[in-house]
Structure formats: C-alpha cells, structure tokens
Length: 125
Image (cartoon, rainbow, N blue to C red; front, side, top):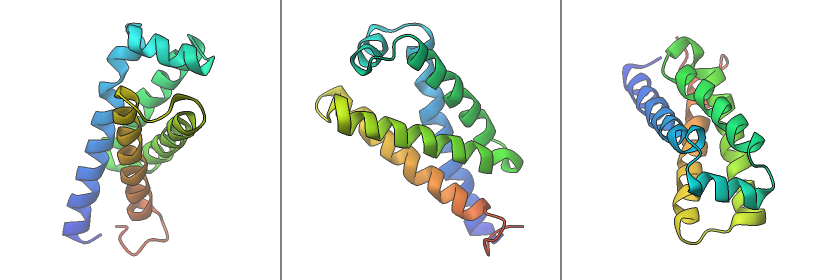
C-alpha cells in the first residue's frame, strides 16, 4: 500500500470509528433523544441497544489495520440502516438531519476503507 493511501485510509477509519463510538453514550445511557428516535422506529429498546453493540464492535475493529475491513463492513451496514430509517421514517429535519449527515460520512468513509483494504485492491500490503 502506498504511504499516502495508507495515511488517508487510517484517517478515514479513525473518523468513522469516532463517529460510531461517540454515539454510544446516548444509546447506552438511555438519552431521551435516542429513546425518542428508536420509539419512532418501533425498535426501542432492542434496536437502540443492538445497534449500539454493533457500532461498538465496528468502531473498535476500525482502529486496528488488521481488523479494519471487518469493522468497515459493519460500519457500512449500520450507515445504510440509519439512512434507510431516515428516508422511510425519521426524515432529515432538525437533529435528524445531523444524524443523517453523520451516517453519510460513515458510509463514505467505510466504503473507502473497504476499497483500500480489499484483498484484490492495488493498495493492499
């Protein structure tokens, strides 16, 4: 992997991990915003806690180059689910718009990590 691509991939992985991990406080402490969001989706509390656990695994896996590919797969899946929830139920107004933008960043960053870390990629070590 070229040095520049390696650094860009690591930055992307860390940004995605930080976004995923910072949301855990709200999900695991039962913040009212999270409860309201998942109630609107009809998935409270199982969806809130379950998605938090997946995000925790994805965020941690992304921090280590050897597990970044698996973490990116989980992150992309979470981001797609979040975006589908916004399109179908939640909308993009108010704080929901911020969450949707964060989901788009996670999706783009996760896809970049997958591209770079793919075994068939020209960038792999």
